[in-house]
Length: 243
Image (cartoon, one colour):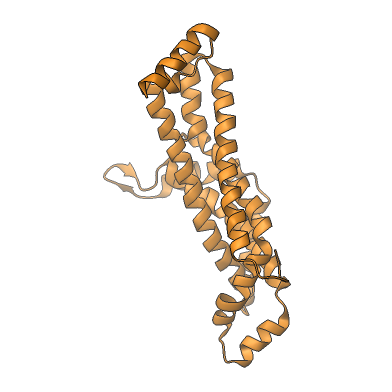
């Protein structure tokens, strides 16, 4: 590790490329913390939006009209308003309304970022699931009903697994957008990668260098996600159906 730090320090002295995150312990620690925060924020929102999206798609097919309209309204609201406005609304409008615990807000900036981005991605995921559900052959649904399956069992055991297979490419694109959208958390001071990088380049005056570091880091994060999703897509593939 010391050899790597020494090499980057020598690189800076020789070329002016100021990668302090490799040879300065303080900058390295806060950049790593920002990277971890970005990964955690992406992971929480990814898992929650997949689950809540499937649930919203289930309610969208409810026999109760008010439930269907509520889901339609939710999807329309979050798909047709800017994500940054949603984030500000949750943090600045709803945040102060929550009770305080020990003098501190019940939800901090990270918590509100999870809530806002999860609901945003849930709205898109619900529509993706809905499209996949419509692609499920009706004969399969009727066969499950004839075997005595309940509506929930048909959805959980037949429709949702097949819909997921049909929609994984679109879902992958949605999750990629989610990772990129986490940068909006910068606006409410969540210490993710963009936020800590802006602190580093303000202190070290190395804006172009840190911009390139950010570009590479997000490219690698998205690349890992796409690779994992493609592996999952191949693992659950049913020949002749969906993907």
